[in-house]
Length: 134
Image 1 (tube, rainbow, N blue to C red):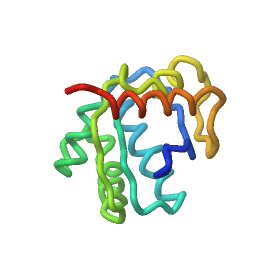
Image 2: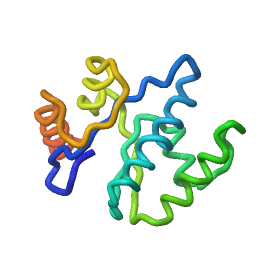
Image 3: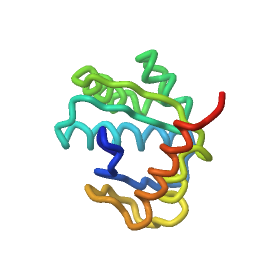
Image 4: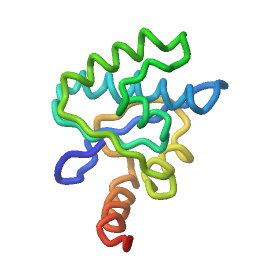
């Protein structure tokens, strides 16, 4: 998570267990991204996810999630209605910070500070995104 100055203000790592990747992505978004944003008191949020499934679900406000997640998903949709928000898809290779977190941090957690080595990756990703030729 970063602020308007692109400074890392929080990050999280979610293992997700032995379930399907889509379920892990959904749980990470609901239980960590949404609830942490709410707890931090942020009202303007830009979510990035490498899960196009989660991005499509949030854009559409669809309820087509596995039944065991429906109550949590409905709660997430009610929380997002409190924000000025946007959600975009980003490929994992375009988000070196997330890749770094996934490959080096073993414990699940939420940090309200930058993890060592993370800010330079965020800065580099941002620089590349502004200079990308389309």
